[in-house]
Image (cartoon, rainbow, N blue to C red; front, side, top):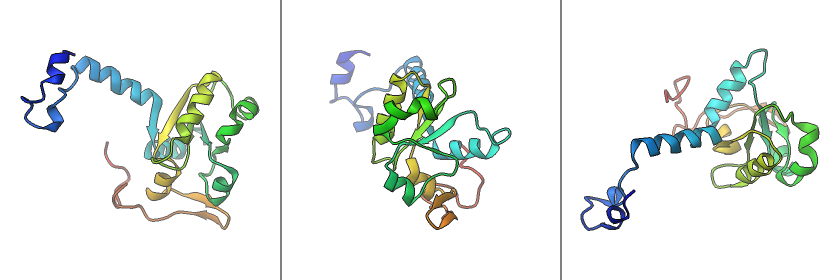
Amino acid sequence: MNTASVMNTASAPNPVLRVPPAAPEVAAAHFAASLALHTDVSDVAAALAAGAGGDPGFTLVDCRSADAWDQGHIPGAVHLPTALIAERAGRLLDPARPVVVHCWGPGCDGAARAALALALLGYRVKEMLGGFEYWVREGFGHQTPTGHTRRDPDPLTAPVDAADCGC
């Protein structure tokens, strides 16, 4: 990208275009890399629901604390707090199987720290954007101390009357 075009803010028609959009090939590489590192709650839920023989092809890892896990967690997830990854990952995870990690939600970078720790150990890993917060807000079932439960979808995070968002 031409530095002069970035710095010439006076001629930009608005704040969005003060820095020009990337060339298509740069954008394609960026978004492909992003999708290789991230997934979202609805895609994880669909994969867990449709997995052949109950196997989605990846292991879902909840990297929150024991107290957070006990407060509520996604059924089928493996509980592996970030601080214990180096010690326990080899016993709990198959290194040949992709891992999807999640923490509390978008305001927490715990899943990124867990993903980094797992990647440094040689695991192929993605971060589930939205974390446990958006799992619950999108209306997917979760386990609590009182049993399996789910909330109605939050209309600001998921379609209320459709199977998926269509994206």
